[in-house]
Length: 111
Image 1 (tube, helix red, strand yellow):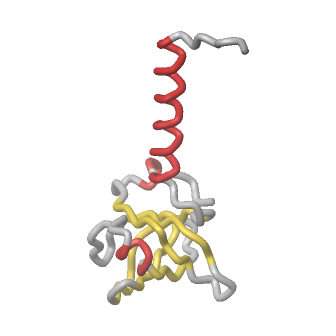
Image 2 (spheres, helix red, strand yellow):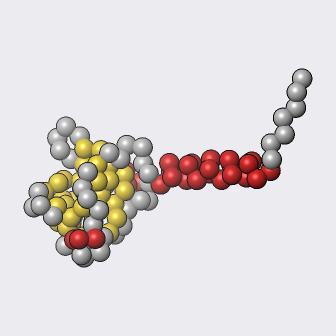
């Protein structure tokens, strides 16, 4: 039976990579396949609408984001981004809701 020696720096790098990959998985919700940026309107509890920079209105249900404490406090007219899955009815079920800067040019592209 042969013994293998693994250098200590290699172990440290492997552990750091595993930790970093795991922390990125926590930061990015698994079901988040869409990102929409715009202005929040018609805020009612966990539901609101986002008017995108192109003028399209997207309905958002932030229940999951609220339960996971991954949401910002919103006010009418606040620039926001919402990330999550869109159902067949066109409602974005947000896993995260964040406030954005007022400058539309700084917003990430919708996807």
